[in-house]
Image 1 (cartoon, rainbow, N blue to C red):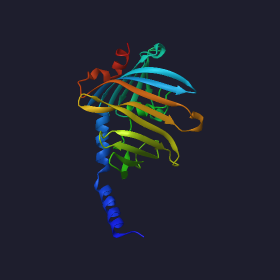
Image 2: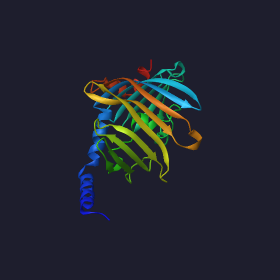
Image 3: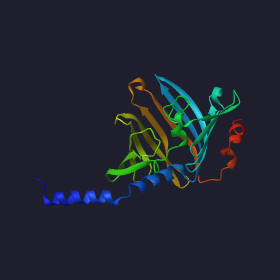
Image 4: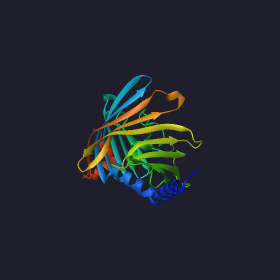
Length: 246
């Protein structure tokens, strides 16, 4: 039987959860992940059936709306570039000297054979704009939020559960569910390092949970990062795709 103390404690915790603006938490997380602008050097390791394929990337971004990615390693992929402007994405392939527009139907396809999608790499969907947010629990170290897509949002996930660090206001993990409630993949963020005046997770590990991909994973390591810097706007043009692929 519950005592008055237990009832008051339950009411206090409930009122505390309702008193926290969950969307404000998500918007702060997005700002910390994106910054006003960012430049990064990234190493990606793709683990498939006990084999590891390594790629190196240079990325430039302005907020959530503009992203430029260039592959610098391995040699066979070097110079392939990607450009995202708002919800539109293009790819330039030097071997065939063609700029290819990636349709919206392919945004959730695998990016270069990894467990990340095109959408993940260019941040086409916004967790603050495309999802409803509800704080489901918290402790001294983290918030746990449940994200469900808005009716008008064109996103694939039926639900995303996020654990967010109270110290950094950055994600610690994100669990992605399909429309039937099945857990499809888990993305974990580790090794928070300080770049300038902000902290950033330098180790991202995404693990798919579908049976046919059991044992696979993709690891992304941020080796260098600069935030809130001036970036030449010519990177974010279709002409820049070819110009900066060299």
